[in-house]
Image (cartoon, rainbow, N blue to C red; front, side, top):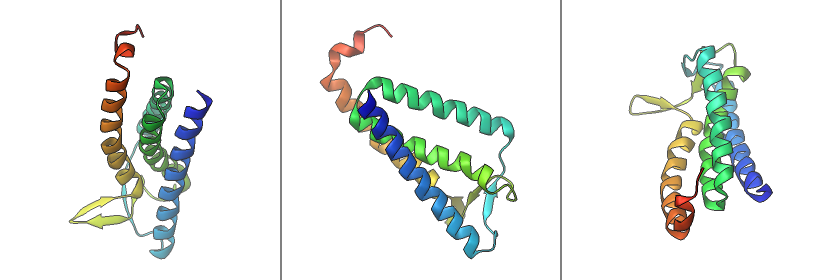
Amino acid sequence: MIRILCLLAGTAGAVAALDLAQKAFSISERGGAVIAHNRSGLYVATGALAAFLWGAAVARVGSPSIAVAGGVILGGAVGNLFSIALWPSLVGVPDPLVAGGVAFSVGDVAVGFGILLLVPATVIFALQNRERLFEPV
């Protein structure tokens, strides 16, 4: 369990740090002129609770590959949540990347990429651990 928690936390921390560093660089380069998506206090509280529950569920599975994929998703979410506190002068989550009229951040990309990693990791884990699928929760 400790190994899984370390993989989850290490991956999430690295992804969140990368997201926040990219946002900090973009904000400093543009003098704070970045697109931000407004988020309420309820959004932040709900997001923090969901991130905590997500991390607990991923750690409970006990799969290293699911822990890494889950850490990528968790890191993107944590980066977005922390950015609200780090840049209170912006109204919401900074999204300094723009492509095709859509604004996003490294955290957003990490969540999408993490889901792409999580699906095959979960299928492989389920196929390798069929007997665990029928255990009581």
